[in-house]
Amino acid sequence: MTAPATHGPLIVVAGPSGVGKSTLVEALLKSTDLPLRRAVTATTRPPRPGEAAGVDYHYWTADEFRAAIDAGAMLEYAVVHGSDFYGTPRREVEPHRAAGGAVVLVIDVQGAENVRRLDPGGHLSVFVLPPCEAALEARLRGRGSEDEAKVQRRLQTARAELARAGEFDARIVNDDLSEAVAALEAVVRGEMTRRLTPR
Ligand code: ADP
Ligand code: 5GP
Image (cartoon, rainbow, N blue to C red; front, side):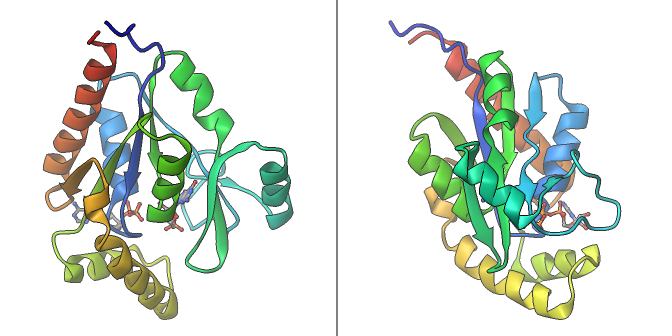
């Protein structure tokens, strides 16, 4: 019999930019009674209107980001959309898992691959899909945070990412938001139960 896991689960939520990952995870955090926390990741891109430092991201300069990499303080990092650094500071994940809580990491597909390489078997990965490509495009434009060139670049990245949905442990279509929230909660609850059940 394996000893019950003392660490809480790490749930990696990935999928194309604009599919609704942040919306989905924020809605789950508001509605769930599970001991769940979102890891706040770091980026070198500037904050969008309405975003707050330490809430949506830690906004770092490229020099600050490089220093964190050199100090071994990042769980993973990637250059996303060919320009900005994005990454997960270890201190956003490890203390909470050690205290038995679940940590959700909202990340891009490269980041999910990095975590898979660094932490094989130690986490559960979820891919969020749009109901169709037109819906993804509408969401990207509707968010109004990127210019046309950036929307086109994100759609191009999305096509390559969508082809990799099969590499993930679970897939959730974000069509009706409340159904997608319920599906994600079921995945997290199942993983917490599995980790706490001696086998
Ligand atoms: P991501 O974190 O994947 O980049 P966001 O959470 O920023 O995506 O969502 C992108 C846009 O899509 C936002 O304007 C958000 O309000 C919208 N959105 C998210 N989920 C849904 C949904 N289920 N139906 C319609 N619009 C949605
Ligand atoms: P956005 O600029 O739209 O907020 O995010 C761009 C992409 O970077 C999204 O797919 C987002 O999930 C991803 N991302 C956010 N944080 C991280 C991170 O810590 N590491 C990696 N690899 N990707 C991230």
